[in-house]
Figure 1 (cartoon, rainbow, N blue to C red):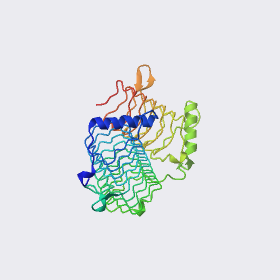
Figure 2 (figure 1 turned 180 degrees about the vertical axis):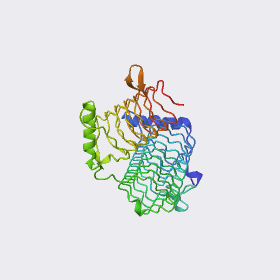
Figure 3 (figure 1 turned 45 degrees about the vertical axis):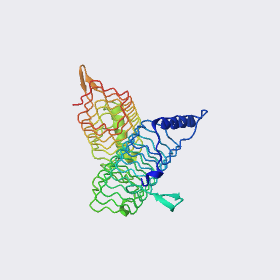
Figure 4 (figure 1 turned 120 degrees about the vertical axis):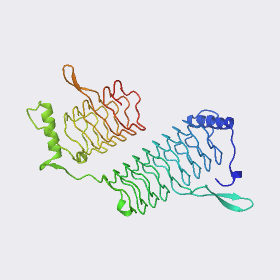
Length: 401
């Protein structure tokens, strides 16, 4: 920040008192008071897990602060200096981050739904010099080199944001306003940009490999030398397999499952986009052969997919709660942000003393929810579990190396 005279020192005892009073304020207890930490020097402070929702930290110095798992919902962080702060898995829903400097900050897995990251400047009245600007050592509204991998920025206001070489891999940016944002050389690989406003955004040299751009006006962005390979665009209105509608193919497969092969027909549908089907919850699709299928964002909760071949499939953001995937072949599958709570990924018994293990080798499970899932004896070789929730997951005897 600029003049040190604008910044107020605060010792740990005073800071703890403010936090305790704020906790009372949030719970409606006597003696509560909303935290006012405007222009306070909190650099390098340990604030992990603290709840400062609705607090006012305008112009605060938070560079290199430890804020992992902190709750900063609706917090005013206008013009705050948050360079290189540790904000992993912090919740900043609808926070006012206008003009905040987040250069090099780590926001991996953070919740930033509806936050405001636009540029902003603070003008302070000075008795001697009139109004003057409180400025950062770097540009305000800056995310240069920040890590936002897997962060949720749904509906975020990011017009004019500077995010040079920022890491947005697998982040959710649905309906985000990125009009005129400077995203040169940023990594947006696998990011969900559905419905995002990219008008006049500078994506020169950026990587959007595998990004979801359904409904995004990416054609109105500057994409010189950008990697636009494997983009996932809007789903087709309908899909046919050998002139048969995909829905009928799946119906025939269910009949095959229900009658032990007497009726219907087993589906072999590689490289198919299943999104036009919309809802596949609780469907009986045992032994479905659908390698490299696209299921992005679909509902497959409770689906029976035992022994299925889903090698290389796109299951990002899919609801697989309580799905039966025992013995499924899922090598290299994309499961970023997928909900696998209670899913069955253990071995599939095929005879006395014989079983087939679920194989998720080289799968990407970054920021997936695996709480309560059964992964007993599953093959998890070279799996990416960055930011995944694994509380209560049955990992007994899983093959991890």
